[in-house]
Image (cartoon, rainbow, N blue to C red; front, side):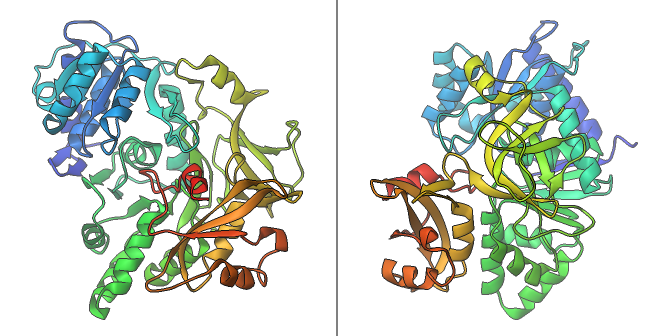
Length: 484
């Protein structure tokens, strides 16, 4: 296949697969600095979404290192935590962030390099041989329920994850994906970039999400694949609704040229799926995954994409739902989702006790509660934050949220359980109101009683300008609980 095929289109230029190969060799040479093998040394890198990000990540692997992507949006304290926790020996930064990272790297005893230095280094050979079982990346979890942990992903895990998705989602060489997601998260790293590179397709990377730029590119007719989080789809919908009719028509017609549009990293509200379908003609493909295992479940590329469900097990992924004792439950019975197979990680970095606790009889315990209905999996929420035990009942916060989103005054919402002497936990709702709307707790309760069981009706309400979210758009439930 031609090395002159475009691999990356980004703010720093248009680059072929030959360009990427050459650049990764220069990066590897700079990191090795005369050594034969980095021997799993952790290399942290703080680079905006760009060709440079991809070349540095590839170069770290070529030199035998473990890539530790740093979040561009994180403050100094979070960056310092990741660098120290991973034991990074070198930190590669874009020149614009050198001043921020230099003291952090120095305090951690790590060598600091800029992208200008590593991409301009002379190429030296040979490079080490990498076995599939060697560590490839440390990806830090989003930390919605605690301090982030470094998830060790091996080259074999990445190969299995990408092969599964290429098979399930029909990736082709002539695909062109538009990538607008943070580059320290598996959604972007594997589902987007990883699949595109695996089939030598083109990955177009935007430096940040800009609703007008994204609409321009989606309407261009050049993009074939798009993947995003529900928050992004809501912003695209709001922009479309605010546009003049001729712009709406142009945007909707342009979307018809895409062959696949996906949503993940947070629950996709059915109302968002339905409105996007009206605008675009596409039924978003919702799937389920985690940093620790890549993707595990997906609605089908061909066949029914069932709203509110995350689909079926992906190729080479084993999935089961079990009760509190680890016994598999029958269809229709909620339980904890467990996963095993070659896609699943092997360890949390330097956390042996937490690693052992994460597995049961060879199955990874996701901490997510799910149920199978007519063969399809539906998520009910996290065992720790989305399953509310109130008045002797177990209630899914996600189920209540879906109902509340249909209220005419509610734009977005989050439901949590808060400790209560009488109920064990009381159901509480934080909501973002639509423009100029008002809502009292009493009004909401009266409305909800006609749509929810009595024990599912919120007993407290807080209105907020914006729900607390992490950088992937996922609501941080512990912060919501603090509102009550």
